Length: 278
Image (tube, rainbow, N blue to C red):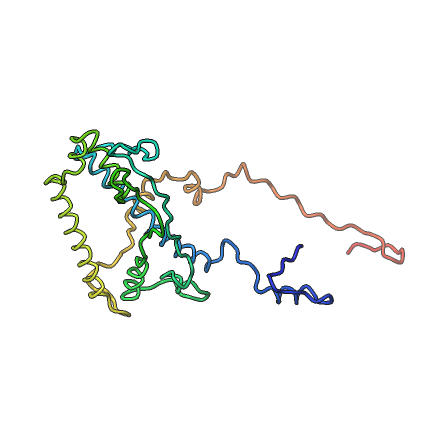
């Protein structure tokens, strides 16, 4: 086996392998380690909140526009280096995003990933953990991003640049894209918001009316074992052929006669003398 030492650790020439492992630190963790699984869950929650949720929201809005008949393919702006005099030409900017912070001290749920922690929480603790798991920052742009208009020098976002290029080439499509949502979609959004508020209120009510500990629920009907199906199955089962043979007399022809006992004859003793029969 190969022993890899950590930086700054110099082994003694006469040191044993056990002492070398102690100097290097603890052993590695398996992929099945429960603590590592909880840490991966905390990291996955951050990725879901910062990357996946905004992406799915953008996809949902695009599908809503398709359902409402407002689907528009935005035009691609021209490159300002090749077409500097075009009104919709832009200078694209390289975008540097802030990396996601996966350090344990900045992850909200990493504080519960330690050896010996319990997994089940209820009541106020469960609600607090649910709210804590949603506490994540938004994606930030450290430098660059967006585009710069070639004619005016104004900095705009990519979506604004595409919308400006679409308005320059196809004003009707740009007006359709910028039109507000229809009344039916607005009503649907209001109903969805009301349903979400009702669900939150129901959850709060359930937490307030929690079942008392060490108490029986007398409002429910007790469970009784149903034996009717077993009886029906036994009645419909065909009768075995060996049931009627228990009390029948035996066949005299089938009974074999016992052999007569064998009578002992005279024999010789150990001394060689004859043993007379009694």
